[in-house]
Length: 64
Length: 476
Image (cartoon, rainbow over all chains, first blue to last red; front, side, top):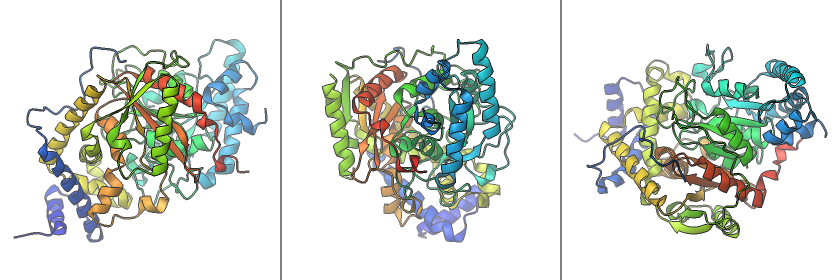
């Protein structure tokens, strides 16, 4: 079965437990779709060896 | 000096005049309150004005000056803060109807430190809802850019931009998650600094994304910015993530030559085909000015920076949605449609995508640090275009391409520094032919705010764009 982007958003919203108004489903779908498309560009990068961090450790030097 | 002219002094000029007893803190506060009363109905820079509180604090400051001449560099300066900082006993709305009745029981550390520095709190400033952006129906009215009332003052520290451009406070502290301090500064001909992450306490700062949020000094001049940063920076046991590094005297290098300082013009941001031509020209002229001051300016590449807007949204918005989870589930109707749809979209971002963005963030930081192996500071436009019209900013998106063009592109300019946890400052850099302000962004390596301020100050003093007055600031 192929879902439209709006149907996919409606189903995802149900799964995560939020209610999206019918008249706002299109906008939410556009926002999600554009982000996923934009981040597809990162797929070309070799990110496998990188460990994500929230706060970077401080450098030992004290700036310029 | 005429009463109204007091409000056009910088924060440091105001403090000097107070220390020299050329003017009393009460007179200064009265001057600002009179301007707020006259202009802010139209401009909507403030959510809450603390008139009685400010006057009482000013009278107390007068009494202090009678017995103690040894006061700090910001003593008596009337300031205002973004309504994202807790203020004990004073409503703190986070720009949202959802928090309109929230009254904190304690002050944010930033508020405590501003008070310890002897500043006087004039009020709480308008902001786009939850420090996001594009709020379509702001609960406290549409904040208007004093340079052109049809245009946005910038987001999300909207009120700080308004209040500085219209001289409704002497200095302010906004907040910068992905550019929320620097962008209003650029659009309003003011100075906005994002300090290194961990430099300033986040205790009592209502969160958007906890590992990107930073308090942002927003001021009329670079000198003011240095002193405000000095007042609020430093370790805070209430925010264990804050750095224990000593706080330097940030103003110490202001006025020193920048001869020999290496400046990198970020090719991907400056050379992008969608940059407004007058912004591009202004940045090139800024490069020539820095060269004339003795700096070595050359182009430098940070390849991943063009993707920073999308990376930022994937991380910042997803974290923001997490911070607002209860609100999104139980009271979505309390939110403005722009915030609601943005956070709902972020709630649906798959973990795989979030994780990829978090890894790309680390790679972006590496690319920045490689650049800092070749140059001391980086420069670019703060925003690729001047302040947009309100209608263009708040219109619902018309498809995925519209989201990409309006939502991600601009965020690469400021969001990149936030992702990399680096300090960056926006300083006035001229005007378009329509008299819209342009901002020059200068960035530096972690904890190099002194270098940043030194270069920004040299540029500011050579150009003096900050002395220009917005039309709405001089309206009677």
